Image (cartoon, rainbow, N blue to C red; front, side, top):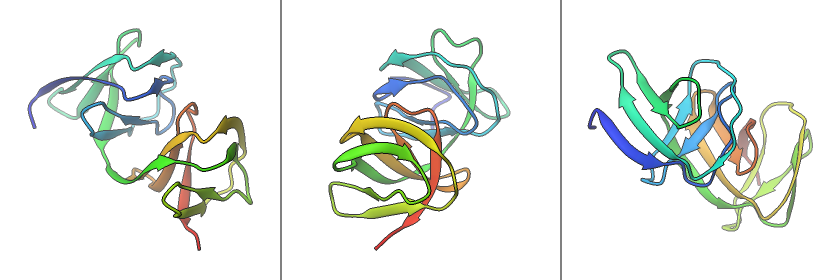
Length: 144
């Protein structure tokens, strides 16, 4: 991999949180691996990915400093069918291809969206669901 990649965030950007996931326009997916919280909303902002000698960093204009990240594997990329109301204990996340994902941890976070884009990654904390429009992620497992 080159030491400096100029790209864009694919979709909405909400800054960084505990283990935020960033899907880039070039198809790569990266995840924050050091805790730092900073909110900034932008739609498809430019992004620069670089190696600082110790780790990979993601730089997005408007953020106070680059975000430390690691590359993660994309497991599922699609749309959650029907209404999405966030993360809760008995949630069931069905993707347009028919695959079902269930929570693997307890987390409550309300967010309403109709058929939101979402991805599942094999990331820092195992399999995680990231839904466009949310800064939180949820650990998940395959359902029936």
